[in-house]
Length: 263
Image (cartoon, rainbow, N blue to C red; front, side):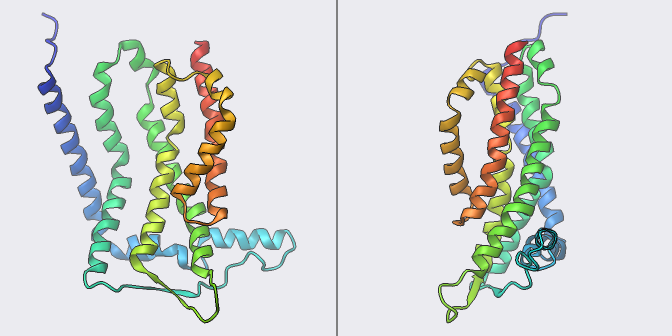
């Protein structure tokens, strides 16, 4: 048998096109599932963060009681209402929210398709070292989304939804504003939790070294604070909540890079 012929640039584009098509189909299927169950997508998931019985608020109340502070951290009510002011606002919000949910549901498959396209370009040894990358990438993404959903989003909703410059001004939150806050925070955290994977591949390519990461640790702290300020609503608590796991992931990334260098 002869050696496989090297594919042309157009052949690679054709292969990539089919990987992207299958990925898009997976996202659309997830989107359809989310769209036909709005009571779960909105009432049970997205709007749950505005209810006092949300797990995060119950945990804060429990911590408050354990520390002997009474109900200082307890969330009794959310004194704001959601409103829609556009004729097609609720429908378009339904579409966009379903699309985001579809992407989150299909992410493991989407990344698997991307990896199938990239893997043939790697040497056999590189493929061996990258074994399990789909699992770890998907795990970190889901972990980041859950962190954003249970930690950052509810604190942002609670702080911004209750904040008042005066008791004469009632908070009537636009539907799109509320949902974009929750979904953006969740997706952003899912993406930034990919830091160890990014550092792994950069270390394999020799672009990043553990010495480089340690040397610029202080600079990384500034970058982390900037990223936290960008991806979170404008409240200091959310920024701190995002900064801590980012710094932990940075230290994990240093360890990953060091292990690769020792091999």
